[in-house]
Length: 458
Image (tube, rainbow, N blue to C red):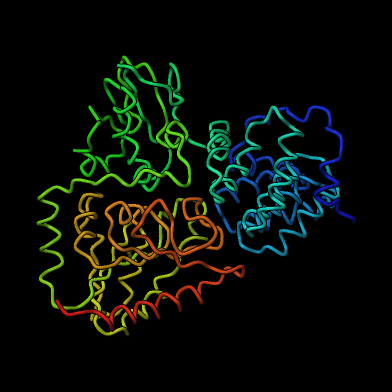
């Protein structure tokens, strides 16, 4: 089947009912029940496959293969299969499946969105941008079509337009954001008003955007109330400009004039690539510093290096951005290092399979919150890690951190270069187009050997 080029797709007429919203989706159990009743239903195999793929379950592709075998002309099933292949980094198969989907339904918005997802994962931003612009024209009532364009623009440093597109996340089905009554702040003078700031994503995003909180009083806020995850509360306790804190999902205060998500603050403050506010200094509790000093012990002239190999396994794309513990173990062969694992969560259990005499100090069990982690990090010489919240914490503290990045990383890191303007102390090591971790770790280990060799004993 011939697949129209991007330019040809952009010339096609708008189909009727392009802007209709999808109905609420069923659960996995409901989909399985429907399959048990009608085992030859390609639609239900497709639905179950999509649900499993969102959970990154390995059976997703089997379900979607079953759907296209039952109905080879099912465009939605081919589109879902393309996305599942994309999420598994099987890009050649993803492109083939998306071509089948578009050939069957050339102007279907969901088919084009699936193709855009594949293009984004492979870094084909020019083609993704063309299709996304067409999607926005094709279906202007569906604001979420602007979401991939936001990723491209922010990656490229086009913040003026990128922040506007980034607001489309509020309409995404899978996006978790607590709705509030009243007026969403858009950057106007606050003039003695009360504003409430809420969090919406992970710890790393809260750490990234905390730099904006002290700036609210400069806009005239009389009182600033900030929602905060409990794990960050002690670290943020003395952040200037914040009058009170509430826990995430706690009942908001009875009176406030404006509210904003913390992730919308760059837009409100008109942040541009050449004027990014620096991370605001964090106050680490004295008791956390004393605890960290006891854990690390006295300096002995060796380079203190902390490392993290995985973010939260519940994050949908963690398998793409994380690496295995084994990748980091060659650091043990570099003379002049003391290694400290900063890994938290289920993945820290991987350390238990190493021989008992392995010279890695596991600090994860000793760190109860981000204040404990920050106290340890500020006493290290370097942190080496894949992308997770600890990278944002280390960058905020100004401690040197080398972040090992997947092919298409979070927009903060851009697509090229070894630096990000968001964190001056951060150095980036990137995957190539083949998404291979091997060269990334080879380069990191080479640089680490050179750093250790040039270490001047304390």
